[in-house]
Amino acid sequence: MAEPKRIVLSSGKVRYRLMVDAGSAPLRDPDTGEVLTDPETGEPLLKRQQLTITRDTAKECRTERDRILHERAAGTFVAPNKITLGEWLDQWLEYKRRDVEETTIRAYQLALVHVRDRLGHVRLQELTEDHIQDCIDEVVATGRRRGGKPGTRLAVSTVDGVLIRLKEALGRAVVRKLIANNPAQYVRVALMDKKTDKRERDKPKPWTVAEVRTFIRGIAQDRLFAPLLLSLMGLRPAEVCGQRWSDLDLDELGVINITITRTMIGNHRVLEKDTKTASGERSLPLPRGPWEALRQFRALQAAEREAAGEAYTFTGYVVVDELGMPLNTRQLREYAYRLMRELGLRQVRLYDARHSVLKALALAGVPDVILAAWAGHTNAAFTKRKYVEIEAEDMRPAADALDLFHGGDQKALT
Image (cartoon, rainbow, N blue to C red):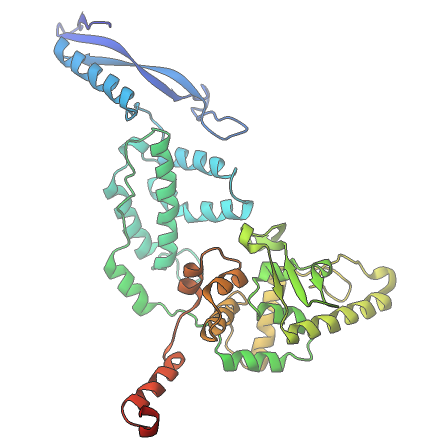
C-alpha cells in the first residue's frame, strides 16, 4: 500500500500526498462536460477514478485513505463529483424511459420544472434538505403558472406530486452512489399550507346521482349518446376514444374489451397506446342501457357510411364523426361541455364521472375487489381512497337508523 509522499509547496509549507483508488465515476464528454450514457440502458458510462489526498501530516493522509478503503469495502463510498441536480434529472428521465410511456415522461418533466428552475444549478452532492424544503415552501406559495394568476399558490396535491418524483430521482442517485443519502426523504408540505389549501381551494365535486340522470335524459337523442354513456359507466376518456367496434360483443354476451387508449400529449398530439397498466386491460359486462345505445349507434354509423360513400373513412373506432374520422379526448370533452351548458348542468370533466360511477357502485355494495377490477386498478384500497368520497347525504341511512335507535319507531326497536 502506497505511503504518503512529502511535498514542499512554493510557499515553503510541507504537506503530504498520496493516491487512492476510488472505484468508478461517470464518464463525461470532453467538449460539453455532459455525462455519457449507454444508448440501450440509459445508465451512465463509468471510468476508473483515483483520488488525490493532500493533508498536513502523513497520519492524516493515512486516516483518510483508510476511511475511503473501508467505505469502498462496505459499499458505502461516494466518490466526489460535480454533477448538478439538473444534469441528474436529465439522466434519470432517460433511465425512466425504459419503464414508462411517453405521456408519463412528459408528466414527470412538467412535475420537475419547478425544482429544475430553482435548484437545477446546485451540485448534487451539495444539495441539502434545507434546499429542498425551502424550494417546496416557495413552490406552494408562488408556483402557479397557468389557470389563474401566475405566481400565486399552487395546489398542495400538485406539489405532493413534485415531491414524489424528486424523491424517486434522488433515491436513484443514492443507488448509483452519486450521493450518500436522499436529502428529500423527510421533506413534507407544511401542515399550515395543507390547511390553507383545503380552506381556500374549491375542489370541484363530481355529479350527484340526480345530475347524472338529468344528463342521460337530456342527451338521449344526441348522436354521441352511446360513447358518452361509456364515460358514465366508469371508462377513462382515453379508453372511450380508443374503443373499436372489434373490441365489442354486442350480439351475444354484451361485453366491452378495453385494450388500447387514444390519449393526448400536450393537448394537441394524439398517442395511441396500450392501457396504462396491465390491470387497465379488462373486459366489462355492458349494462342494458349502454348495450342498446351502442347497437343503435353502430346502425347509425352504417347508414352514415352508406350515405357518404367515398367521402367516408372507416377507421374501426367507435367514437367518430359523421365521416368516420375518430375524435380525440379534447374534442370529446368539449362536445360534452357544450351539452352540459345546454342542459344547465354544472360543467365537470368526463374523467370525474369515474368518481360518480365508482362511488355509486361502492354504495350499492359492490365488493371492493370487483370495484377495483371495474376501474382498472390492482389495489382496491386505492380505488376507494381516491374515488369514493362519502358526503353527508350518502350517510342518510345511518341517520335513519339512529331515528330507530332514538325511539322514532318503537316497534322496529323491539
